[in-house]
Structures are given as structure tokens and as C-alpha cells.
Length: 374
Image (tube, rainbow, N blue to C red; front, side, top):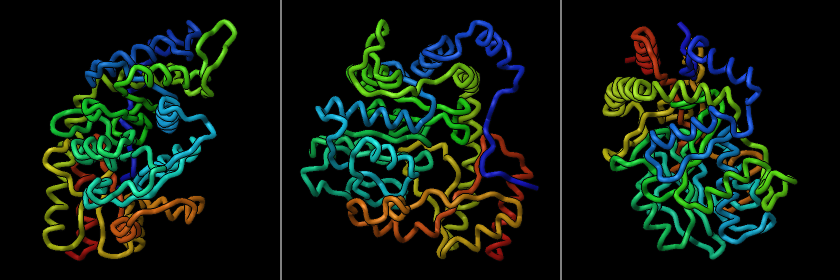
């Protein structure tokens, strides 16, 4: 049987046909249209955020604008630059959003949580003004420690929580710690709207900037005048309709994922206890619904990847060490990257879907046992 790396949880056409037909008939398919506004309302209710989340055509532009908004609030112009502490162990989109804002990443290490640990990083230049933490695989760093570190060093904090929809630290959503948070609604993610992304912030000025930045930077519509250089990054109706329908099922989505995660953790914790591999450490005070299930092998992963693919199980070499990617290699500063360099070629992400059959579990676990000759 085939197990794909991703199996998006999507509504049936019959569930969204009426709303989509209404949207097409009205011609209101974009430009802050009705279902987009309702999606933002429902997200605010789900997260309990003081300010309404803003949604975008994708997560990358949501992150780009969030960085841009904070840069503006900090008093910097579009051609000004400063340094941003960020984990190298992330998707290239994180670094791309920094660099396209004319800022300079400082590549930092992660630990066994696959998250940036503020105990292992330092503000080693007066040019460092911001820190971006990435919610790898849905995991979260110690948000109390992150907040203290940022306050001590006068840093703006942004959370790239693209893969961390509904993750919690000490029973709270990340925005409840005062942070600005981006979440992706891409089809590959835990919760999706086919394509899309959102920002949750606690600062009214940032909120106002974000609303203008996703609409070309326009502050008035009579002449379409702009006071910031925004882009057209608005979400359109069909994504909002799908997002709304999935939000109706979010309790099922999360309950199902946590049930599947428990199966995975039981199986892989046994392998880890036998010294066969390592898994991502998730602290007891973190609720992590897992985007994929990462394992760290004791050797370079090519042979394992090929074996899994031969048995029709799609796996992914994800994340990567972005400081080694062609464009970024040798271009920006690095801090100590010992752990990242040690795992970057040994880590593999296994498929973990919202809905999985017993046959899929058995095929996955049996194949892995077979590889390790168990």
C-alpha cells in the first residue's frame, strides 16, 4: 500500500458548494470579502485573541508582512537593515522572509527539541534587534524563557509557527504570552484552508499596519494612496470557505492527531529506548499536534529514505540546515551550530495524517522494524 507524506484534510465538495456558488454569483470573491471576514471572526473566537487575526493568501506573505510591520514600527525604512536571530534548522521560507525585508539572519542552533533554546544563543552584536523562533513540527520552545531573554536584550519577538496550529505552552496559545505569531493554513499543515496563512498579534499599531500591507499599503481608497509599500496578499473566498468548514471540525482534527501521535510515540519511544534512533523531545508543558513525525538516525539518512520509498512510504528530508543552502552558504553570520550540523543529514520526517487506518499504521511500523531487522 502507498502512504503519502501528506494527506490534506479537506471538506467534500457538497459541504462547500452552496457557499462557493453564492460567492461566485455575488462576484464577491476577494478584497476582504464576506467569508474572509467571517473566517477572521471565527479564528478570533477559536484562539480567544484580543485582536482579530488577519489572514493572507499564504503563510509566507503573512510572515513577510509581520516582519515588515515590526520593522516599520521600530522606525526603520525599507532600505534599512539589522540582524535577526533565527534557527538554521527551519524551512527556507523563514529565512527568505527575513532577507526579502532587507534584514540579515544570524543562524543559531537548536537542541533536542529541534527548537532554538535561548540558553544556547547570545546577542553578540548591537546590530541584533529581533529574534524569530520557529515552531518546528508543531513543537514550542520555552516561551517564558524566550520572553525573559527578549526583554533583557530589548529584542522584538516573532514566532514563525507555520507548522504549530493550536500548539500550547503551559496550557496557553503562544499569542497569550504577548508574542506576534504567524500560522500557515497550507494544505500540508495540521489545519488548512487549501492555501493561506494568518497572523495573531497583540499590538494595535501592528494590526493596522498588517491590514494595509496586505492591500498594497493603501490607507484610503479614493485615490488608492499608500503610506507603506504593501503587496496584494489578501486571502480569496474559496480558501476562506474551506477554512471555515475545517474550523467546524477542528476538535475532531486535533483529537484525531493527538490519538495518532500517541500511537507513534509509543512505537518510537520503544525504539529510542533500545538505542536504535532518537525522536524529537517534547516537554510535558507543551501540547504538540505534530506536523510529520521526525526521527533522527545514527547515520546519514539516504539508505533509510530509499528503503521507505521502495516500500511505498513517502518520507521527507525536512527540515534542513538553511545555512548550507546555496544562496545562504557563507553569506550571513553564524553562531555555534553544533547540534544542527550533527543532525542535518540524519533527520527524516515520517507521514502523520489526521486520519490514518490501522492498515497504514501496521505498514509503517512493520516496514521500519524490517529496516532495523527487529
